[in-house]
Image (cartoon, rainbow, N blue to C red; front, side):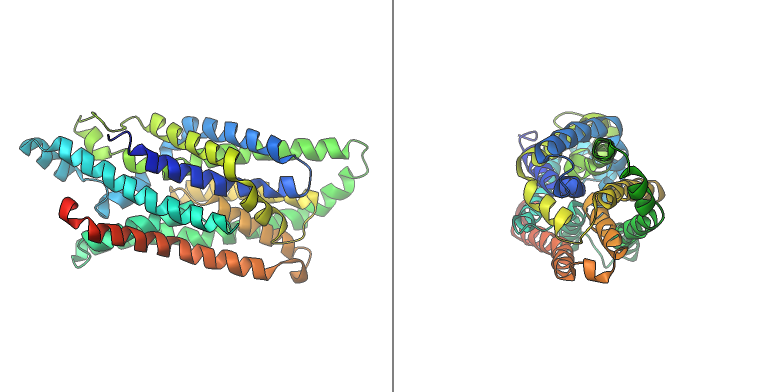
Length: 356
């Protein structure tokens, strides 16, 4: 039954994949790479990235979930071992993870339906906080301090991530974009060169999605407390496998439901050239890797891409940016953690008789 509950996490991964493929929308909307080619490359590389490096981001999300009573702490697990209630605790942990993923996944899917990009990181964080606001004792200064510091790190990325990507994109395009475009456009093989560049960028960017975002999909099923106490039955205790499952779920979302949001991000935020679109992907990948290294937590590829496209558009003038679309995207970013949090809080309220 516990493994069946993974379906909620896999749904979250499917929603994430349908959303995060927009990262490469500029490759498709500039007609350099066909949509079908792009999604196949993305799906394969996401899975590879998840298996190779996705496990590194599981810990931080699990810490936030533990402090907000989603994942059991080591003390709670040891108490369950002493009282013989391990099986029930494992079931409750898996159910709570399923609830969080379902709330976040439904939120991301709903916003995707309106062709708007949204951060799965925001949705999951919002759902975890919503659950914690009901069950975690925020009146305790120690708990409040722990939770707020963790939440602050996650929330800070929601501003720093797109801002950094926009700055990096603006600098890259301002310094290299026009020079490269002018030089390469004189070559007879320009189309082949730019297409090869896009494909390389898609490969590297997709690997970064697998490394960075797979933890968002199944991290809550990887319970450190159970693993540390040697209780492995019915829970995922192999971080590589856990991340890999997340990567596979993301890949399925990329392959089946990614076109709508991809077209919005790639073609409706700003008017950019083929070279600009290539550098946007590079800026996104650089930002995600740098943010992950500096903060040590998974950040949103989608937010980085939106910031990078905005930076690219601004190099051509403010009038080249569609601020109406940006306003809608900004509203979606605010709604994502709010809706997911409210859903999780509501479920916590109606299930308190079971979870206590």
